[in-house]
Image 1: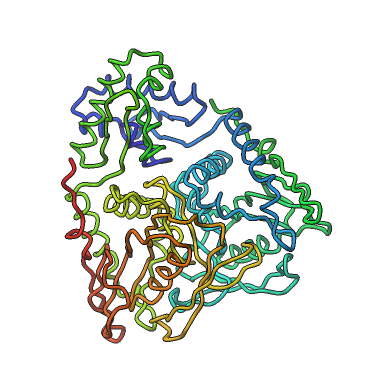
Image 2: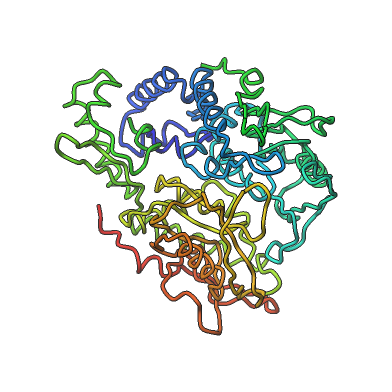
Length: 267
Length: 267
């Protein structure tokens, strides 16, 4: 039952379904679910919502508590503070983190916690490094992930494209999304791995509007120092990289605004 | 306990750890694990391996049985046989499938089943559409995913690159991987979403060799008809697209060689 629920987050499962599947009385199913609910709450690692009534049932919401969130983000910030990660141009090597199942699981759960009750219907990112992140978040919110591309590909069919100002290269670039990727009126969460000036995120925001959809939130793994005014003001960041000094080989990171901008008060 | 094991596939957990965590006797932990083992086996949806002795414990292996595998692949082939998926140049629109949590879960589990006992240490793909696939497989094998890129990016640092012959464009192209992405002697599973002539897969195979690593297997979601000789002969495909006729708007798909090339005989 635990496995069944975990594999279908945010999905309401009727109690008679479990009773039939396991050949058990509804009362003993309810008792087992109560134990599961308390265990999840004790570990601050998930919420089991019970909905009463004829159309009722039970729903598993991936949700991390403040303590495990702080612990993980401090650990991650510590690992990012490694001078061998510094790349030319104020970039930071993060591909190892974005390919590790444990990190993707934790980062995915954290972002899914922040937006657990925001009625997200799709997660959007732009190629390349945001993709594993977007899929992790999408799996915990149980919604589709869509990927905008920076150049036309023959394997996508008709697309809608927007121009945006890339703050990292100070050039006008183009990104596009297949017309069939998003339905109208979809509530979209935008995620990416890295934010400097926010130009790429602003491009995604434009793209969402072109599809007549709403931006439900903008969330990045790392934000880094940026001297000019950012194109995106309202965002959530898991990690804040305060300083990157490639000459002195110093990189300073700490948890971002995620911890203050998330309501953990659900257990 | 189910949740703990599921979140750490292929990882040996000592029984005393569970006994301490849940404040229970080792004997009752063993009993609960026996129930879990039988439930997984009955549903052909995972293996719980028990290792005896002082260094022993229990390990969860994501593993699907032949019946659920056949059922899913037939269903998927049916969904791919939709003429609106046909794109110019003999390509097929698959981005929706590669962004859907349920499909990624099933495809990831199937590939992880095929290579469950192949000592895979990393999963490699090339951008863009293989990425969500590679991360899904990597999460069930609990190993890192690495992504080769088709063009130089400033945010990756030093790279090793190879040239390959793209069979879809009939041009020589270049792909590269950061030098720090793979250690020597790593046992690498190569995955991708689509194979025509196998040129891109062959490029990845070269890249693995440049890192002094071994190719443990090559697995694709879809193979499609190709008139010339393929550059890759030994591969596993989940779906075989027999025919794509854009004029007649016909696309025919069926399960690939995965079903005959997987030993399901583990329950």
